[in-house]
Image 1 (cartoon, one colour):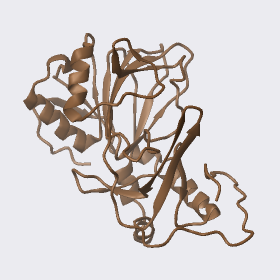
Image 2 (cartoon, rainbow, N blue to C red; image 1 turned 180 degrees about the horizontal axis):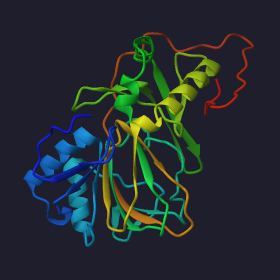
Image 3 (tube, helix red, strand yellow; image 1 turned 90 degrees about the vertical axis):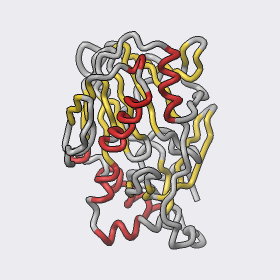
Image 4 (cartoon, helix red, strand yellow; image 1 turned 135 degrees about the horizontal axis):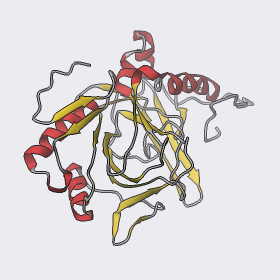
Length: 288
């Protein structure tokens, strides 16, 4: 990754794959010119970290998120009193998600991004990791990319109070950069539509492991007041569960767009009469 992008901010890349710490901006009173530059940096680094943002008011936080688009009101996560757009991420209220994932891909229009501020962090541990899905796709061989470009996948969640599914391209095209990125994840991708369940399991097992390989990742050690902004369209993230003390954060989520990619080149797979699905490792969330 070249660091030739010129900026008025002090930008410190965290890894060769993605992620940068940005100094010299206060989110409480960010102006239009600063926001435009921050958004440009986000397209470049995919996840930005802005330390020492204590005192960020609820009104400013919501206004900042709305610069990206409409904000989500989550169906079951707790929220700040009087501000349903500000979600509370609390390790003691189901706020730990130690699995690689892209947020809410089970929705027809997954979020385009999130803004998370850590309010309380444990004395040690509790880092978060991100993975660059552009690089994951671009690092695959040409025959594998050609196959994936013609596939779609079902993303699903079936839990009490939340039942949703959507079909998305396995490789999506970013609407602003035009670059291609893998768009499957272990948490929410059920199966690839054009393959048998066993074939799909094998391919998803490979893709979910490969796409989160260390060379595609960065890791951030939180301090209270730090803010992360990430592009949910082309990253996965993982909240490391290696701590016991409470960890809390405040998050706004920007509602999504429609993931687009190549049209599928094959019809949906239809099982033969009597065909059974016997999952081994990764397994579909839905039967035939």
